[in-house]
Length: 402
Image 1 (tube, rainbow, N blue to C red):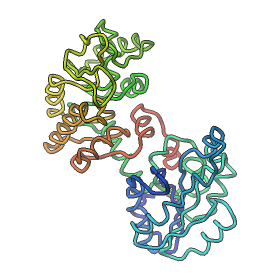
Image 2 (tube, rainbow, N blue to C red):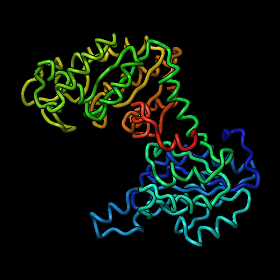
Image 3 (tube, rainbow, N blue to C red):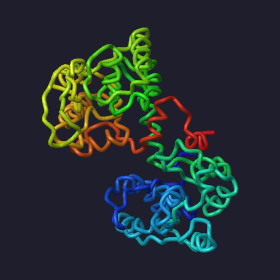
Image 4 (cartoon, helix red, strand yellow):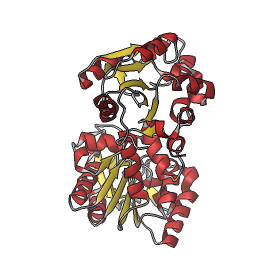
């Protein structure tokens, strides 16, 4: 059963959303995840159904253990209520616990067109443990289960993976956001057109090793930028000064380059770098070859030669996956490389390439440079997206697909 073809008239849809949004002093500072869930909620309401929303927020039990001055109240989803009501243009009710008598009474009393938000699922340790009894209790709140939380699809938690077994096949489905994420991911992994370029950035090779290995069987070109590039340069005998480097991963970096060569995949490292004498916004800057960085200096962005080299590859691509920035783009002096790559991805997309941007920092970058609407798809799931492209089966997807 697909979400779009289901009629929710007079049904209570229990929807797992990802409302784990940044909240500071009771104010939501970025509501992207809430907005992404709106089409799914609106479809149920438009059909004449009612909506029961469940989400986690933060890691209350783990954080309270570390900082005893914190209480469960510091992790409440209550600040979401008024904001969601504004976005939907309708009243949103709140239950102060996700499986209390109050929650069940409010869920039962919901009339078509009404919305109820449950309190933070992670008030219960059973949620993260994937407890079956807890999942079964949650399942009794609604008639239909909808998973629209791609950001948590890689977790085998009660509300994301275990709960689905308590609904028959025609009463469990992905929401519109999940459908879109899965479709975009499969477009890149399984239906890609060549040349297929993967742009992989970020700080550590160890964080991206599995995704690179999986892409060796799919991509024609892999561009590597960010701090992780310097581990490769050092492995090849280069001088990288004080640049970020995982010394325990040097052999692994060489092994990756060998595997890529054997499979005919071109791995592109940045020829030059913007270097700085300290990791700070007011650092002295220069540029130089990435494998000849003097002592006391560190690479914090890709240089102009690398930008030209990478842009050419990206603009000739038919499929593009971008995960991770090219440098410390949060600081103005070191954002040029990441911005130039974003512009190249936009240019290639305009020429007909399919482009998927995913991973927290890459998404933050395209949002910062106001380019999110100029690429084919922007993924909301950091860890989930990474595991999807590592070729792993995600429990939240498997639970519905079977």
